[in-house]
View 1: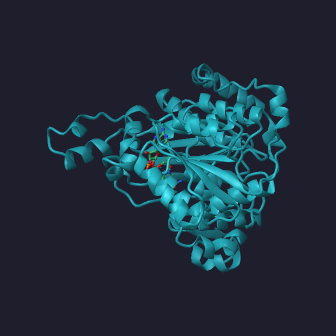
View 2: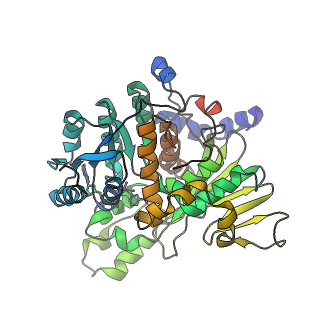
View 3: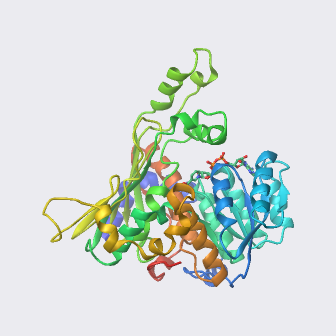
Length: 448
Ligand SMILES: NC(=O)c1ccc[n+]([C@@H]2O[C@H](COP(=O)([O-])OP(=O)(O)OC[C@H]3O[C@@H](n4cnc5c(N)ncnc54)[C@H](O)[C@@H]3O)[C@@H](O)[C@H]2O)c1
């Protein structure tokens, strides 16, 4: 965005800017020495055997436990959940894999603080409900542990800054575990982008379009907490599955960064209609009031002038999609169904199905690891992300995602809410890296 345009934007978006400033969106006067010590590609000393405390061993945490017990070079030595049946379950998985029984923390919703303060661990990894991610991450880092979290990392801008400032001060990793970065089509698309097949990338789209109505109304698992967010937040509460892979293809925080965002939501109808169709007239669920617009659409402009569309739709009947479009001057990749078009290759105006592209363009990491990942959560991508995390920690290498990625991608939650509330006005995205995005190198091609 050129400077005159920026001034114009600041003028037209003045109300939104003022609002954002009020919630700390323009913060960033972090401790200079802490920031200086923490490079954009932060590396920590190598760890021979990564000792892990796992917090929140429900559906997704349970799936990570099952991955981690078969990844070489790590041990889950402590587990924490508010439900004893889940810590029992996790203990059984760990001992069943031939590892020593973990220390157990199941004495209430803040018992993770005791885990972080007591246990000698290298990493605390959480798959708790969204509201607990940041408390766990901060407790971990303040007690000298690296921290990893399920998505999104944070729900507010203030919490995004808290993650960044704590990671810099404590010199710890704080990583958003975005599994969709490691799915087979997304990795192939990224590999093709790196080979220049689509030319200069100008635009990308992603999203989380998944009919969760039944799940949100269950009396267990995500039904216990995810529906509640649909009552208090109108924007995009879950932007990272769509944004993660396209952020890599656009070099976000590695030469470019999100500049500003506009967002709009539809009316909220899906959950109310579901309650009427599935519960008797006197059921409390039929009295619930939802604010989350059924389709939320945000547009992000990057500093280098690229555009991104990110969508959220979890309350309406529809097939699953994360969209995953990456478009450049010579062609594009598009997901669901996965396909590509490259000018000058194949027939004009005709998509080429991903199946025909894998033999030539499969990402090397997928080729190397596919057999091991088979059968793991979400088609194997969860295993690959866990494998990469442990490998990088063991080697003392930079992680695939930085704390600045965790903050920038998660910030879209509150920024979309603020734009929706102000008739779609632009809101600036904070520069969480305070300029480091200019010098942090592109991700490159990952290997096993
Ligand atoms: N990446 C993905 O594809 C994916 C898929 C599903 C869920 N998730 C994410 O994983 C997280 C958990 O989702 P889920 O589906 O496993 O939900 P879940 O409800 O099945 O699991 C959450 C677990 O956390 C426990 N818990 C709640 N509060 C706690 C606290 N204060 N301390 C310790 N434990 C606590 C619960 O008892 C439960 O076992 C969410 O952030 C969600 O967005 C990601």
